Length: 504
Image 1 (cartoon, helix red, strand yellow):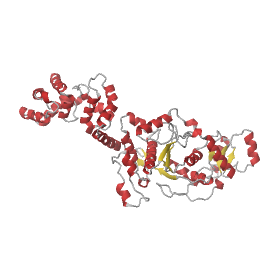
Image 2 (image 1 turned 90 degrees about the vertical axis):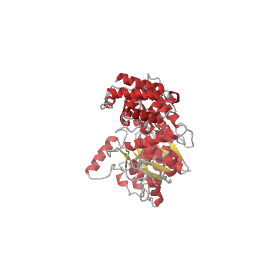
Image 3 (image 1 turned 180 degrees about the vertical axis):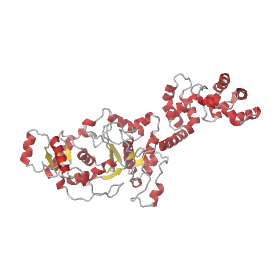
Image 4 (image 1 turned 135 degrees about the horizontal axis):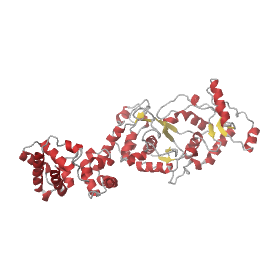
């Protein structure tokens, strides 16, 4: 069984980079007919944020990425919180002690700091002098009985030779052991494991076959492979995902910029568009591992509009670029707009979208009597081509819900070349003409009626349309005048034409 895992730490809200990692795990698991796990790596209690786990689960649920096993779900690999699996890590740590691949270190933090400084002054690349490596078993036992605090370190002098398997994205990597600390700590003095030991143990115990994680873990890969070798375990296949960057080329992080997933929900972005946007950030560029022309032919470009089902069908790790990718907000706008338009074309889409934005409309226009879901649905139908995201509806189409404001600079600039006499004559004529369509308002040909009035008055079509648009909306841009009148209805349309003449 192909089994993948998404293993965030509960140190804050799920951000875009984490969501992309979860998405790629989801896509690859589904692509291979497998499953994926949500595992919470909470062994560092000092960094844990209350409510973070619930926030992560809510973000995944909103995004539509349903995990097969994990918190809140039963499964064969429970528990799914590392803080509840401590006994397991102790068993593996003891195995390493017994085989000589690890040893206890009793050095104090102050002593370790002094040692690092001393080694640095001598030009050594080592970070520890292995002072506790040669302690006798009796000495170790005595100090443990005496209650001295200790950590368990990997003995990197006893590492077996091995051939590193290629990364599924980066291929064969150079040996990076030199960048690792000397004899890395595996079990801390508080008896909690470091990420390195915990992730290796859990991936093995849970039967994880593929590990898709961020590029920031590449430097730790040699250590993890060493642990698998020392424990005589078969490692999973690894794929490291290049980082996402801000537009200015800086690393996207929780501390910089607005990258929390739920912020995008609250601002009205579509979850399908967010997944589409993230999936294509770095996917679609074939590299050395992609040798067939078909892979290049089917690699989507960075603004392809894809459903989750299409992403699963087309996803291929061999088409994930080696380079870090800029996450361009403009592409999200393009993608989101098209997902909204696709939703409007589906049988239930207009109603679902209207219901989702209904509360926002009522909050924006609390005194309006024109905020029913069915009416919001009619408004969405005529403004959809201008809508980037749902939360923009009150901003770009407020005149459908409340009376237009003729005092704004925009409204007054619309009539800078129109005399009051012409304005009044056009609106009177249009109003009289529209009254002839009272009995067939929903089917009337308003475009033809307006053209007739243009010919009768003798003004230009553009001028007449601008005058009528001003009277109905007080806004330069918007749907066609005929669509506006149909949505407003006969009574409100005629009332606005009358009020606009009075105001002028």
